[in-house]
Length: 384
Image (tube, rainbow, N blue to C red):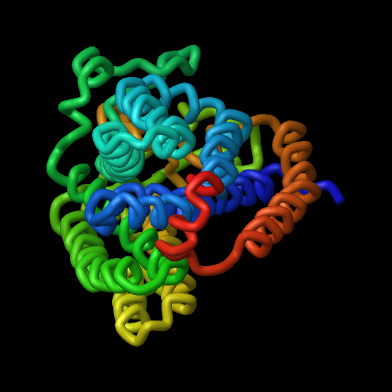
């Protein structure tokens, strides 16, 4: 079956979004656990329980992040080039913080030294907190527009101050989005710990959910109100054929108040996505209090779908809007790779993604069960 070019562009917008959500649900859980590690584990054995709740799977989960980056490179090369140039220092900070994770998981418990272990506990905190914050900050900046323009050769150009400094990225709205991201992933990690641990640790995780879940709803609501009241969106006035060759400069774009809400008035069914982002964390809070963490984890994952999906739907069809030259904004329709490239990648996903999902499910099934302090103390050298 040969899909037309316009349909493939839309499919790849959905697939990239699915990869980002898959990363948040799986590796975001690991990052959330890392953020909570120094606070929920009071003793060394308790911290080892927390680490062992995610350590066997974290590296496999992080593949979602690598795959999402690769998919953006292959499906939207113009977006990859512009984003990784403009957010260069932010990306470097993410990678630097991620270095703490493999070393922390693998070497933290190799030495029976309190200072050594405490240092790597905070290293795992950094490896969870900083990427979560920066990813949220990135989405916050996308909703405000990024100061770049394309020249006649479609080469992106940035303001020098923006390119070489982090300060312009850390504006108030972007920091709000970053805090939402941290709270969301920490909530997700807390529900996972309530599901996978026992006694005191599970109770502390339950208490953390009681704080984090309402915080996610409040921060998400504040972000939506901020966008509605103070951030102009982008709207395409005219453009070429969406199924034609990609040319980001062949369109006219304007900024307008409320434009980020256009899709919800045109397609009211899409309102279900932000509703899920608002109500989902409250359902998680209730299920956690009822001590039903399995259902709570499912709704926590759905909450992530709601929050991330809302950002994607609001931006659609924009992928990377330009604040200095709106006509240079990159969209689903004009930033895509060739028809052949998208087709080959599509069939690769159809074949291999089910295999990856089945293998991931099998791994979790084989290593399922609650982890206790007694298990760690009885098998000190067979655990992380």
